[in-house]
Amino acid sequence: MPCRAVPLVASLLLGGLWLHAQGGPPPLSPAVAAARAAQARETAEDHADMQRQLGILSMRPGPSGNPAAPDAANSDEATAMPFTDLPDPLRMQDGTPVATRRAWARRRAELLAVVADEVYGHVPPDVPAVTWHEVRRVSTMVGGREVRAREFVGRVDHRRAPAITVEMSLLVVTPVAATPVPLVIMFRGGGLPGDPPPPLPPGVRLPTPPPGGDPPGTEQLIAAGWGYAFLNPVTVQADNGAGLTRGIIGLTNRGARRRPEQWGALRAWAWGASRALDHLSTDPTIDATRVAIEGVSRYGKAALVTMAVDTRFAYGLIASSGAGGAKLMRRRFGEAIENLTGSGEYHWFAGRYLRYGAATPRRVARTPVDLPMDGHTLLALCAPRRVFLSHGIPEQGDAHWIDQRGAWMAAVAAQPVFRLLGARDLGVTASWRTAPMPPVNTGLLDGALAWRQHDGGHTDQPNWRYFIAWAGRAPDEAAGVRSLECLSLVP
Image 1 (cartoon, one colour):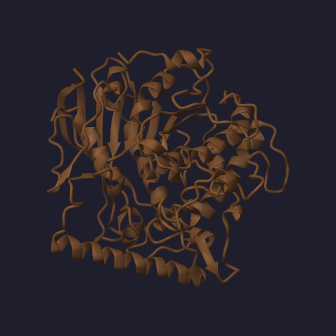
Image 2: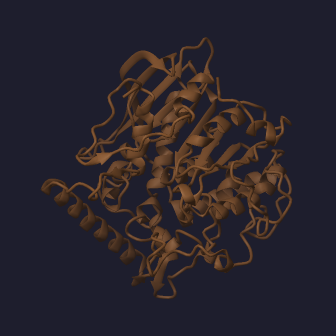
Image 3: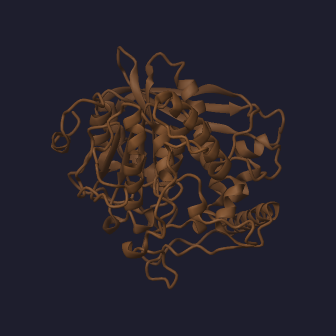
């Protein structure tokens, strides 16, 4: 397999986008089946323990992602809006309007506290230090261009809990250049260019990329003079509830279970990205003032959280982030808050977030309308830095579950903060409640807040060329939306 396919394979493996041979997925070995059963038991026990800590007696069930199921998630716009307003990011908690940049600084601090208190959790103040080690370096080619590829391991000091080891995997690939280059940190696993792809289980095959498509985003970045890095999220924190007593969350708790106010995996992954940026900022070949964060699906959520909390990131490519990311959680459409608080996804969030999926007792239970923030809040916290929201279409696999329109509404609702801070927004003047979405394959790419829904599936691959062009020009450059739609492929 040529080297250009390695990042694609890694992305497909992490995203779970397997194509199984006829007959369904291959059978699990007894050892794998036993390990998964143990993980499921530990997850259920941890989920139940958090309910006990919060005084929750029962949880509301979430809808199904299967459109044919009796309890399928809503995909009817006529019933998607059981609310009339959103928390105003430009109004202090005491009701005072925010009309200046200085006032926004105070409001931003308030919102960061709300985001931590209610949704993503607090990072402990004494997280151990990370020491980065280069373990491999190769000079090779990506897309016919010379690159320097390096593998780093970020080892977290674990003297407080010697049995818990956290070694973050960071792969960095940069073009051979005379000046420091901008770089994108991507939440994904993978290998260095030229590494063999990971072996596939028996009976599993990967899709064949359509002919005539764009080169992988990694090749486009190198061709445009950018570097890229793969930060493997699960080397920071496991993507399951059983892992909460391990990884960076478990290490800070010395192997004990979380308390309700503590961070979940999304915030832990964002912490990992910040530590990667710490390290990259010491590299003279990288322009640390022009580093982007990127992710798709759950890693799109993590990328948006990263961008919101760490102002050193200059750009964000947030793809199909859905519930817990850019979409409005108040909307009754697609994935619901009850899914996020169920045993399959609760580990992404603070323990306290379970209250928003609680059924009883009533004194504990909350609903999405009770949230003091929403997807537009995260986008507002990114202002005036550059945020590109990417989505596909349901017909190609970016399902209604993602709620593209809910993310669009959040973006429109975040515009006033970008304007206050002197950044160009989407240029949409209609209300967030009624503003029509742009047609598919038509981007709004003139401002610091950008949007493009491509005609592909659950991936940002079709938007890489647009992201690179958008990030490479001044945000106030009046190049025009249509001119970007007609750009030739990145040379």
